[in-house]
Image 1 (cartoon, helix red, strand yellow):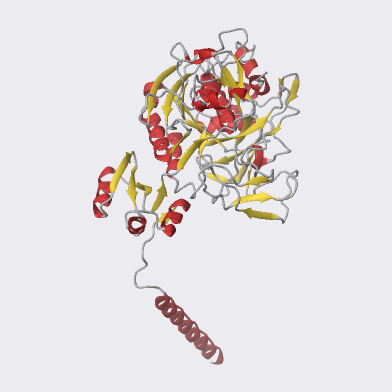
Image 2 (cartoon, rainbow, N blue to C red; image 1 turned 180 degrees about the vertical axis):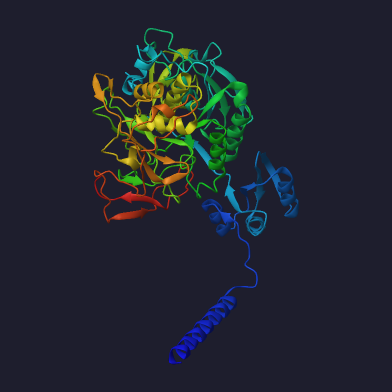
Length: 543
């Protein structure tokens, strides 16, 4: 009887506690929680400042966007494939974020080319010269039959590097004729697929995939800047025309500050659409690896390089030698992890310092930095530039070589092949140089044989890092690849992971990287247009 009474008392107490908890919840909860769409950091600043002229990217089909515009008396500035750019003031922005049809809103932020204006050995350093020559086990590869879309400041198609129908299509999203007036796009395009120079002093200069075709999609103006909505349009254009022109690669040697998680970023959304359509998207990591005072910066990857779907590239300084033993991460190269999402980036690194390529005639870079001129003149002029833009171009060319060898290679497979065969850069670690420095000779051998083997580059025996990471669906884990590949399961269409692969549930940092307690959140790293990077991690002691 006592036990029964005790149980009854406990039951009553539990019921009373449950009722009180429910009552407290009901009292605390408002009758109707007001909807607020997520805002990118720049829009939040505009709203706080009461700005009167704001370009905002909304999502939805044409009908729903038109309905939103009518509802708030807004002007549709530009229509996109999956949304539009609306011109609003702070009050209208506030109304938009309360609209139930909007999940998140993004600013049409400024995009800039990513080059740091500073005998080219790029091809030899990554083994591309050996890929061109071929061997008993490897066919001669030049990227033939593959088209790379260069979304940039345009291409000077009058340059000899692009003669003989190298550029097979042009579309200018800035309203111009596609001709590069800044000089950046021409240089990047030459790195990817430029033909060999036509004189004795320029004959050594050629693109990594000199047999590939180029698609010229201009989104940056004469000063090398543009807006993200034009880049989004260009990516969607490439997707729509991929079968017509056999577009397999998109090169994005441009970027902007990360203002929101990648899932909300319309630029990252466009990258994801392209990758899901079968196009490998190569993006520059950014040139914010250090402060003006020389301090090393972490967390400064630019968009769209923060997308896990992009193949994000950091820059290596070869120090002017083809040997890889003296290679280091370029100090300007942006390091991870990414802002908001903390994804391990970059994915890979490649030569990006003092890379020689086509010089656009009369362009801004050519006229402003004549000391960067290397050889030739007029339509056969070559100059050197430095930046993760150049490194991205090198990787885009490398992807084109792999696609010639194995046309059915999927974007995830191309990324994995390049990462698995790269050389880990211990001095920079995973968040500096990613899986490692590009070795296109090893990658081409691997794609052809399904076996990871040591290669010899510039007289040095190079061993693959056997590390690949940042899978689009497993962005917070690292793929351990000291593995074997099950060749019996490797079809011609895709690379299949062997069942022996172990997914490590923890992010593994190289032992050479020590996270000191003196990490600070720096507020002095400023983008060209005075946008402050308030969440870049700065290591204030020697790296």
